[in-house]
Length: 260
Image (cartoon, rainbow, N blue to C red; front, top):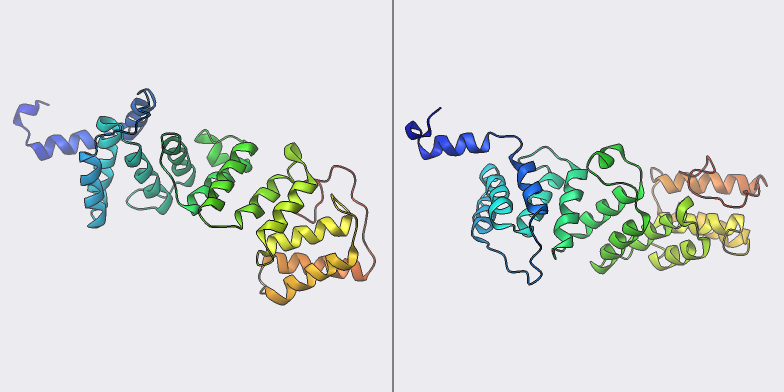
């Protein structure tokens, strides 16, 4: 097809019909030296953001891809990640969003607290869709993202960090308990795992009465459909029935069927 006979709109339509253009833009971006002074051209990025503000998401997507390709702008890449995270114009794809967020963050872009939570989760758990995007299990990196979440003002990010310290590779009961303590009493997950550690004497001297107190507090403050309300109810029943087995040394997530 000879472009001489095509209008500018036709050429643009053909240009953007290439489904691999986004991938090519990312590959090109990754091969481009990082400008540490943070000086980026922003003309295409600004146009894309204007289109997004106007609700013209297809045009915004196209300009973000072009900004990545032409301007090497990490903020365009971050905005593209948010489109995938929120399912705007493109089909929602959390692992791809995380992949783009991590690249953009390495080049100076900060994310939202919810983005950091998602990034940490994909680095903590073996999620098949994340592995396909290159997000292999990396617990120290997960902790980094959860700490960034805390920096955004979400103290319950420490609850996520505490859970990392209950993973087999990072097992540290003391640090886990400390993180759950910092997360505070309003976080039902932290309350539950503090009680669980106390009940079984993991990282702290066994204290059944204090464990019962935390379990009862969860039941008082949470709704019955809360997962940890159900867990706490089970633990209290087993304590009442004096069914408190001693967990083997080296308990971690997945080593006991009562805890996910």
